[in-house]
Length: 423
Image (cartoon, rainbow, N blue to C red; front, side, top):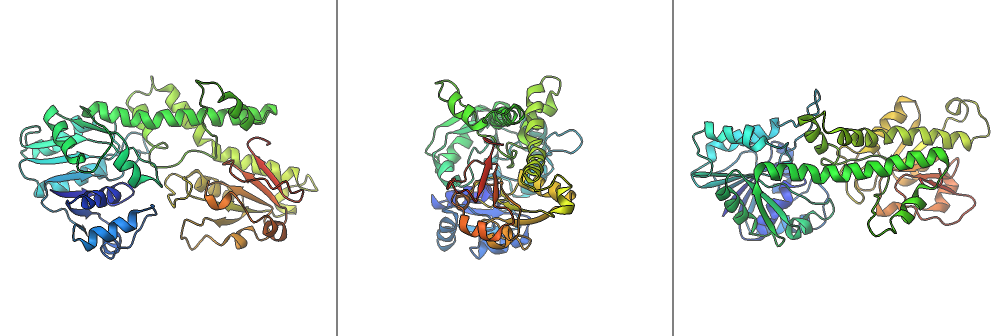
C-alpha cells in the first residue's frame, strides 16, 4: 500500500513513519521546502521522542521520502492545520481545501481519502465531499472519504498513535470500512466506525471537555486568590471524592486543540454554546492574571510602595515557553501572551526554554541574572529541581512564581516559592 500524507508536522510526520515502519511506501508532502530538505536528510523540525529513530529506519529502508508535491497513491491522508477565522472564530478550512485540491490530479478510482485535521461538524459532508464530486468521483463507489481525527499527547505521539482507540467516520459505511482497513496497518487500539459528522463532533467535544474542566480549575484559582484560600489544597482534598477530578490550574491553555477546537462548536451555535465560550474566555484571561499577580508579588517584596518599574527596575525571568512540558511546541502557548503583556508594560525580560532553539532566548544563568522574580510557565522536567544556590547568587530577589505547581521546595529561607496555593 502506498500512502501520501499531506502535512509533515506533529501529526503527519509520526503517522508517516508508522506506516513506513509497517511495510507501506510513504511520501510525506509539505509546502515548506526547508522541511522537505531537512526530512530527506533525516533532520527533524519538531521534538518528539522516538521519531528520529523511526524516520532514519524508514529512509534507510527506502519506505519514506518527503516531497513538495503529492504522488499517485492508494491512500491520501490530510493532516494540515485548521486555525480559527478571526471574524467569527469558526474553523478556517482553507488549508484543508487547498490540500484536497492538490491531490485531485493524483487520485484514481478505488482510492481512500482521509481527513485527520480537526474540523467543525458537517465540514466533510458540506465542504470537502463536493470538492471530489466536482472532480468526477462518486463518494462511496469509486472514492472513499472519511474523517478520522487524531487523539494524541505531545511527548507520547508515537505510542498513542499505535495504542489509542481510533474514531473512523465515513461518508458511507463502505467509506468507514475502507478507512478502518488503512489504520489496521498499525493501530492496536479499537477502531470505532461511525458517520463523518459524528466523528467531527466527537473530536471537538473531547477537547472542549478538557478546556471547560481546566477553566473550572482556573476560575477556582482566581476565587481562592481573592478570598485567601489555598487553591491547591482545595483541589487535592476535593479530588479525594470518588467522583470528582478537578484539573490542574495553570497560566492558560495552549496547543492546537484545546485553545482552538471549542470555537468550532461555538461558531455553529453561539446562542447555545454559552458554557463553551465562557470557558474559553476564562482560560484566555489567565495570562493577564499571571501578569497582575506578578506585579503584586514584586510590590509585596519591594522596600517601597512607589512605582516598582521606575525605582526597582525589575527584571522578569521567564522559565518555559512551550505549552506542553518536555516539548518544544509553542502553538497557542499562554507563555507567549504573558511575555507580550510584560513587554507592553516595559519590563525587562529574560527567557529560557531548554527545549526551544531561539536566538532571543538565553541560558538559565543569563536568564536569572539580576532578575527580581522567576516565573515558571512550562512544566519541563528541568524546572522541577532548580539550582537554588545559583538563583540566590545571581538574582536580585530570589523569588519563584510557579504557575505549574512543579517546583520542589527546598525549605530555604533565602528563596521564596510562590504558587497558586499560597498567592
